Length: 239
Ligand code: G3P
Ligand code: CA
Image 1 (cartoon, protein in one colour):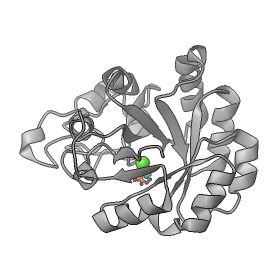
Image 2 (tube, protein in one colour; image 1 turned 90 degrees about the horizontal axis):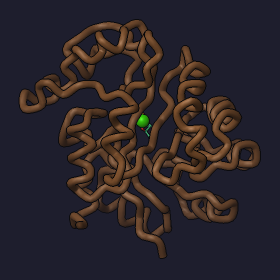
Image 3 (cartoon, protein in one colour; image 1 turned 180 degrees about the vertical axis):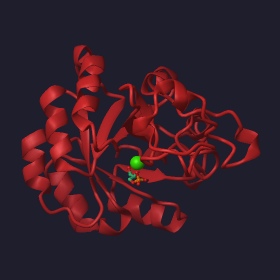
Image 4 (spheres, protein in one colour; image 1 turned 90 degrees about the vertical axis):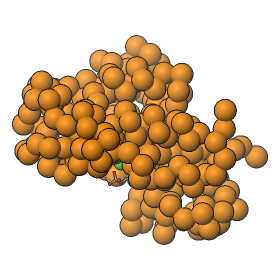
């Protein structure tokens, strides 16, 4: 049996400010295999990691990230809102995160950009196309159309479909884009779904799981991965 893959949701977002290198490092320190994070574009077309469309909730600034230049984004403090200890943490660029993750963990890059998604894909293609299959990168999106567009420009990357309310359409989407994984919201997961995914060759990575009891149930169901805010959930810290 393969060991459960441990994902940290926006990094170890219960322990450090989400989507910062500090939260990514905390995830790796606690034995995570993957960091889940969110991709958006700055006004000048640089892929950066931020959950919301605005910087209001997770930085000291205000405004839409898509209207800010990279220089403006890099000036923001993305740590103090969480705890003064993290003052000076910045919103990472995708390039920084890729460099940081090398040899440390995989990156699950969720496509959050909506308004300029084709431009984002064009940038991702320029960055990744020459590299062929990328074992330690897994793109995910709630939007089937995005996964289709991404597959058109990056034929070899791993794709996961995020399902929050239903998994209707999974089989046809899988036929169209050859998914690697289904990323279902926890309440959608049951034995039937896990069996169905196994039958069509998809890993199941469940979000967001923060209760030890539920983790044990999911392990017993045979899911391949769990995405948590607090990697202490997984118990032991591996070398
Ligand atoms: O990847 C699962 C999860 O991150 C999706 O929801 O809103 O936290 O990006 P959200
Ligand atoms: Ca996400």
